[in-house]
Image: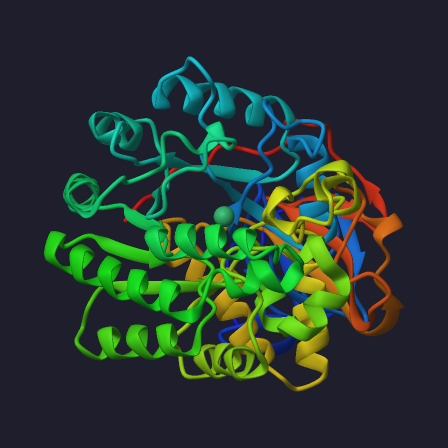
Length: 467
Ligand SMILES: [Zn+2]
């Protein structure tokens, strides 16, 4: 039975005997690659002259993950992670494309910072990559130029960049007038505007109050960012973005009520999407408290009703994207004891690039999500929303051969010591999961093979969006 015939000329790579995720389901077939592109998906292809054959008996082959939200932040924070270790981690976790967030470098303009990041990524990335441009009140004039240079989207904070995080200087919209102007400028580029939606005033006062009352434990962080601070900003961002006719992507959303507001906006036909992180899907606030500062994230990990709302939002299509918000830190930066047990002194964010897809494959095995839905939210939808489809995000003839070979029956334990990102830490440490990534292939080349990396640094290519 032939599912799709492409070219049957001599292939560079053939994957035989596996079940390939094709047209929404797993199909027992073979897959060939020529010049980095999928050239044929059909059974009983001749293997004569094929340069490399992979036997995928009892394995499934799915499209590589497209992670649209990483903060590897090499250059300034290379002690936390760099583009080599970061993309090694990504490849080991079945991610074949990373979209890196902007980084404001001291004394440099947004465009200079972008060029420096791009230069570094070109030298180091093992997988394909794109960059998000900084869009803040002091960088409005750079938006058009950044779009010309190929950013896949823009990022804006609705909270003031904290002074100690100077790297966020180019991303802050200091008030709603500027937020609207930023949206209008991005709308002209046709690109997506990614927004971190939290209400600055509510949070700033709450943190002040908590510190004044001597409350600085893990839950003080959670309580200082109440649901309303997310909901209000979510609605405000949607109203302003709709007015400006810009495509809005709300990053790492976490509250049940925000999901309801987004659901309503979609019903009205507003152009809005939203992301959820693996840590918001797999932890409740009580569980997060046990782990402590490595689960200090913004918005905070919330209670079970919010977690359940996130899973339901994925199911009904309200949440279209899962993205890692990968944010590594050093152990020192996350060590509460050395900071008088003050959670507010610890950095916000956690490294999760390499564990995201493994945790989600386990969720497929536990029937929390279907494989088809997982591929929608982790490959297809991110590629479509950020202008990388049909090159990325799908297994079909003509697409880049970005593939992950998975043994869905293999059980193993996630361990911090086995992580590739520099700090070697995962909040999923000691989780027993089922579903293991054996090989990750980018444009037909095996990048990760059972614990080994098979390409040189700099193998990744720079991706620019096409709509
Ligand atoms: Zn982020």
